[in-house]
Image 1 (cartoon, rainbow, N blue to C red):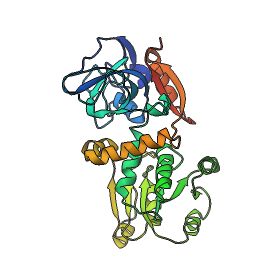
Image 2 (cartoon, helix red, strand yellow):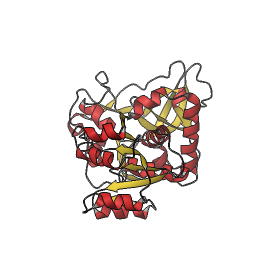
Image 3 (spheres, one colour):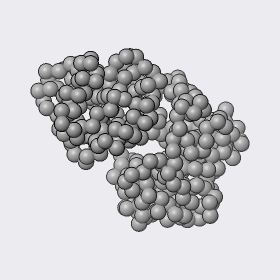
Image 4 (cartoon, rainbow, N blue to C red):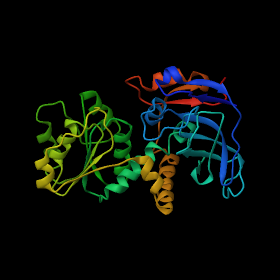
Length: 328
């Protein structure tokens, strides 16, 4: 089969190569998927660079999520039938014609959900939904999120809207404001405008903001803390600024605030099976109804994975870059 392989860690454009390798065989409790589409996630690129929390032994096939059709199952892989169209996340070696995953990782995908959405349905959307779940907020309560025009911010807005939770979205620049408002999300505040914090208090009618999700770190985390209500929680979800958290100690102490992190991969490995099924059912239902649609900006064959990685990191993207198996 054809697969994308790295023999060393480094810049994706320099280390990604297409090679012919033997197809994997499913072991006990495993299923093999004939891959259709597999997305390029930021964490995939971090793994390739060797700077993620997980470093695979080399040589390695990258890729952690895919949609395709089950073409073989191992002993004891109950409930998974050959010929079923499925999605899987938390996989290893997904950028290949065939990928083997645990049978309990696969999720049957109804025909109403296109491949473009299905291939990226379980990683980032599930992380965003688990995050919202972990915030323990009630309908009518306020949360806030920065970098809200990114994928996580949009998903958090969508899921919160479905659950009746109100979201104050913080972005930079009028284009990002317009983009979010076109999706029907709001209120949206441009933090580059004068008096934005006072405006935030105005649009929330002074009601308490009980949770804040920080994707930027640096001083932006401190700005979120300033909006947070007493005994609120600030959740660190990312560090787009590349800086450590910069938060006023006095605000943490006197608000008796909690600051904690969220790592979707670890959270997913710990989730109770019943909760996992509940959240997956919610996700697939939203996708099947057309409420949740995940765009693809560009599609590349496996032997152009290096170009695809460059495209994935090009600013101004409005959808995911994906790899297609069998497109030679």
